[in-house]
Image (cartoon, rainbow, N blue to C red):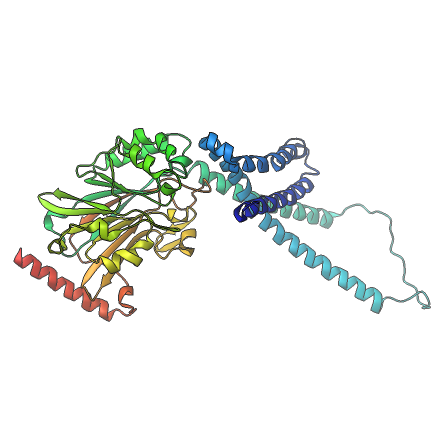
Length: 471
């Protein structure tokens, strides 16, 4: 018996085909008096209506996926590029048709009311003069009306085709147009010897979605050019099969950082044989922290790097207590970095259970892959599902008089639709800075006013001054 996801998939395909047929019929009407469109574009459109659903079904068919993830991804990409604009096109055309239907309905009612209530019957002595039915030549006003109608039709089809241009731009231009973001992380009591420590973060590589090794090689070259002290990769190395990692292993072996390259596992990594994945990653420079930590030294100062397995998205493999074991409480003032794939882990576990963790790095959300980020305007699909969906988040715990930071990377690769529009793939450089963070609200204390925050900041400044005096 077919599973519910299978039924939903076939229902989705049926819905998309219905939309496509509707759009195709509208386009045929539009091209009726345009010879070139009718001769060349209409047949190509009809071919797409027939062949693209077959490609999507093949892409989802298990034997195809097992035989070649790349071919399956290409077929899926063709389906996405083809259908996403059609949905937007359908919305444009449907709105136009709804208005046309309302206008027709109004005219129909008006005609019947006039016929039933106002028009004279055959028994009336008065008669209605018959209009002259002979054809007359089009005058200038008729020609202007026809030109306006044709202009409106062309504008409608142009508006309907705009989504196709946008999706094509998002797939072919922005899919691997890396955005290198420079972020300063302010920590008030940071050891002066750690100031300027540079961490470069990658996340959500999704090797199974890459058509070649080239994007990963370019990303690694960019990372190495930033001269990082430490590199962190926060999960989702693959899509569904551990063998997908083979494509990017040569690139991962080229990653360089003075303090090392560290990683944690994500939810997609557990869809395949995670043991095989970890074994293959051990042939690279990446040190996977699976509920464990490492102690390193920078400029003679100790710091701890911990990583947890994934918790979230139906999985609960993370064990923060185990990851931090053997770190004595006397070292809670030492800088702590945590790698955890799902950003929700920060609020549910890291913040309440380990407030001495200064900075947590996460990914998972991809920033939604589609959205708008311009100045203070930050909108993305991921925002609908995640409170912490992209960028730097800072919270102050008044009870412990400590700041905690979370950075959510927008991902390097993609899953699902091979599309990035407005949310570019990200490489993040996080530089540690000795300073008091600027935050607008004190959510952790449940207060929205600025008074308590100002007092907290003053207390922290005094703490930093006393720390400086002692040191």
